[in-house]
Image (cartoon, rainbow, N blue to C red; front, side, top):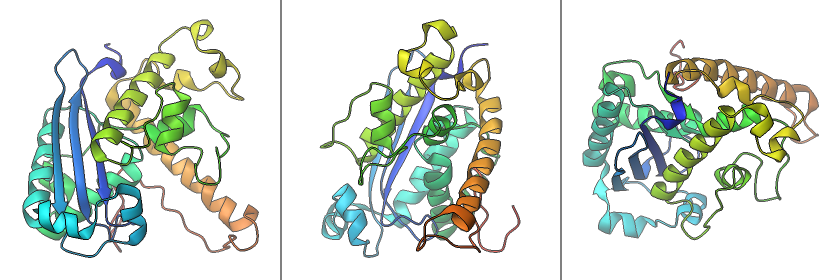
Length: 273
């Protein structure tokens, strides 16, 4: 079996109008085919969502409403183009890779497909999406218990993951879809490379982890890796839900908290999962 991390991947990332995939609109997208011994193939979109963005979103990606109105492709045109490109990747059985891809980006695209095409993302693809590599989910699995770097830098955000695996970080280029997509693909490769080394040859910092879980990424196909991530996402959601209900500090504790662990595509409204 060819190791999953050395095969062709399609790195996918979106910048959006807000943090909630149920309400957010795409403002930029990068879909980049990398690896597998083939040339890099990059497609990018700048999108005019047709709505006002949240100020917090603009502060992150720096794409103002005025800039998008002047230079962006209308969402009604861009979303079908993006969905078609992703569908071609899925049909070619190329794994989709991204950071928080299953919890945010794919759900964002799914809701945009429903909004502009009247169909779900899997409906557009005409097949279930079964090869997703979510580097945030993988990083949480192999490096649990990581603390926040600072008040503004979380333990598993893209910058932290990149720096953990020795990739460095360019804050000036960060939060652009193309840069973040490429960084997620590089992080996936680094994780896979560590997992497929003999334990004795892994970096010192890996040996210093409280648990040794990199073996869970070794010797599996992209399809098998997708399946185990479903269970990891469910377990993470259950753990966070329990934290919010019983262990969170006053002001954050919610005894009725419900965290949906469905991955990578969450049901809409009252639909069953």
